[in-house]
Each structure stands twice: as structure tokens, then as C-alpha cells.
Length: 117
Image (cartoon, rainbow, N blue to C red; front, top):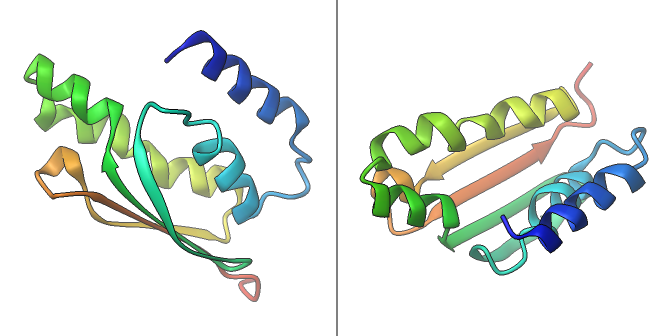
């Protein structure tokens, strides 16, 4: 990661109102701080639903160059679910496709079930 992107991410974490552990927090902490490291589009966003399509990912790029693509999913991609649960147990993360598993893009879906007890 570039130093300016690390600083931007650090500032986002420091400014985050911990009471607002919602999908806006996911967007702020995970996507708004990405910079030009990856290429992605936000497919849909509502207060309860957030969807991204990632067509180029720096982790996949590095893993491909190093020949470690098979382990990249386990080392890096699999943390998404745990991060979401740690941020808010009502956030459900789904990845239907992954560049590190040979798909044409990564497909990330975040759902916030506000009615869940």
C-alpha cells in the first residue's frame, strides 16, 4: 500500500463513529480508502444493501506475479467475512466470484439485517 493510502485509511478509522457500524462504515473503511490500487464499481447501494464488482485487485496482481494465487484467497480474501462480523454481527458478507479463484471479477455483497435480534 502506498503511504498516502495508509494515512487515509488510518484517518478514516480514527474519525469513524463506532456507533455507526453499518454499510456506510464498510464503504468508508474498505472501499473509499482503496485509491488506485484496485478497479471496481459500486453496483448498488441502499442503507441495507451494498454491492461491488472488482475487476482488478492489487492482491490478485501481486499473488499472480509471485505464483501464490491459490493461497491468496485464504490469506487475504477470506478476512472479509470476519471483518464484517467484527464490525457488526448484523452484516452478512457474500462473495459469489473471486479473481484469486480464477473468476473474471470479484463480486462482493454486504447486507445489513436491521431486524435481526
